View 1 (cartoon, helix red, strand yellow):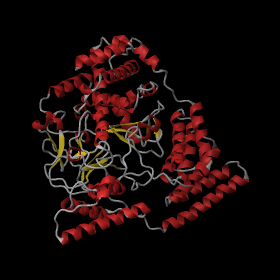
View 2 (view 1 turned 45 degrees about the vertical axis):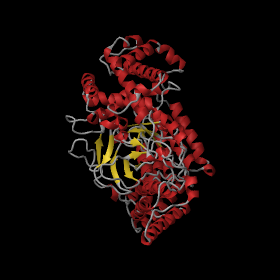
View 3 (view 1 turned 90 degrees about the horizontal axis):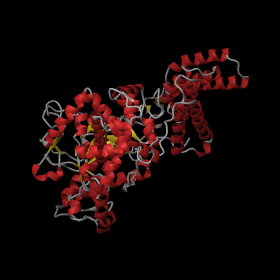
View 4 (view 1 turned 135 degrees about the vertical axis):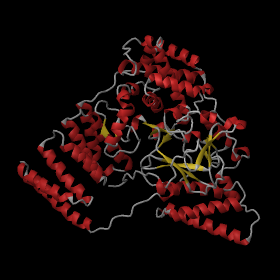
Length: 629
C-alpha cells in the first residue's frame, strides 16, 4: 500500500504546477481594511432593513459582521467598528452577554470618542437586561463621558433617555425570580473511563469477533440497557467547519460563536473564546494558519475533509513528540496483529481519544477506485507543497522546488499520512448541522449535503459503531459540542450497538438504501434488510398486530401508546413539555410494543423517532436564533 501511494504522490508532485493552475490557484487573502469595511457595510444594510429579518437573515448579519472582524487588521479602528456593529446586532437578538464581550473589545481599540460613548451606553443597556448591578457604575461612567464630549443636544438627550430606561429596567429585573436551570440528569457518570482493557466507558466495551470479520471492531454494552439511556458523552477529537460557516462557528470546537474572535494572522479561522484560540494554536493552527487560506483557494477539490486531514497530521506530529517519533508509532500500529487493540495506548490497554486511535480507524483505501485514490493523492501533494514551502514542519523550507519533495523520505511519509487521514475522514467523519429552531415532528430523512451543513467532526470511538437500518442507538449534539450516544430501544448485555448512517428502513426502500451505503463500502444485513421490512406508510396502513397477550397487557400497551400520542400532539402544537417523565413514558411504551406487538410495525418506527426528538429537545443544542424581531 505504501509503495502504491508513494507512486501516486510522486506523480502528483511532478505534475503539481499543472494541478495548481488547473484549479485556479492564487495567493490567499490577507487582512485588509477594504474587505473588512465592505463586509461591515453589507451587514449594516441587512441590519437596518428590519422588515426582512428572520432567523436566516439574522445568521447572515452575524456572519457579515464576523467576516468584518476577521478581515480587520489587528489593533485597528476598523476592528473596533466591526466589534461595535456586531454588538448592536447581538443586543438586537437578545444576546446581551455576547454583546458585552464585543463592547469591551471595541472600547479597547482606537475608535472615536463618539463611538466610545455609544458603546458604553449600549453596555449599560445590556447589563440592565442581564440584571447586573454593574449597570449602575457603568451608567455613571457614561454620564461623565457625555459631559466631556461635544455632541448635539438631541443625541445627548437620546442617550440619557436610554440610560434612565436601563436603570428602571434593572430595578424590575432585580425583583424577578431566576429561571430554573436545565440539568442533564441522564448523563451522570456516562463518560468515565475504565481501567479494564477495551472498556471506553462504564457502559461500552470494544469487541472483535474473528468469525465475523465483516463486523470489524465494534462496541457492545456491558449491562442491560433500557430505551433513553445515555451510554457515552465525549467531545470530538478534531473538527473542521465548512467554508461557508467559518465566520459563524468556532474553528476549534465547531460551536456556534455569537461573538467570535479572529486569528491574529489569517482570515480563515474564528474562535468562540480565547481558550479555543490558544488551544488551536498550540495543537495545530500555527502551522495551519500559513496553509489554510491557500488551500481554500484550490477550487473544486479542497473541502473541509481535506483540511481536517492536515489538522490531524499536525496534531499527530505534536502528540507523538516529532516526526521521527511519529514514524515509530505508525510502524507499531501497522504491525499490530491484534485487531481489537489496534491503536490502543498505554501498552495497548486503553483506547484513548488521540492520534493513535484516529490513525487506526478503518480507511477503506483499498476499496476505492483508482480515480478516487489519484484525486486524494493530488490533494495530498498540494497540501504537502504548502506545508513544505510555508511552514517549518520539516527541518528546512523547500521553497519553489516542488520536485525535491518527491526525493525526500520525510516528505513522502507526510504525504502518505495526509492521504491516509483523508481516507479516514471520508469513511469516519460526521457532517453536523446546526439547528436554529426547535425540532419538530417532521421525521423524514434528508440527505446530508456539505452546503447545508456546519462542519465535520471525528470522534474515534463513534467510528467503531457499525451501521444498521434498524439501529438501537442515536446521537445527540450538546451545546458544548459533546456528542451523547443514547439508546432508542432495549439492548441486552453483550449486544452490539448500531447507528444508522443514512435513511432508516422505514424511510427508503432497501435497494436505494444500499446504493447510498456504497460510499462506506459495505452492505447492510440487519433484520430489516434481510426481511425487507416495508416503508412507514405501508406499515401504518397495515395497522398494529399484537402477539398473544392478556387483557391486562393489551390495556397497558394501549395506555402507554395513548400517552405517547399526547406527546406527539403537544409537539405538533408547539406546547410540549419535554422532561424526564415524558422520556420515561416513551421508554415504557417502546418496551411494551417490542414485547407485545409483532415486528415490523409503524409504532416502533414512530416511537424511535419520537425518542430522538425528545432526547434532542432535552439535551441537544438548539441555537435559538430569533425568527422575529
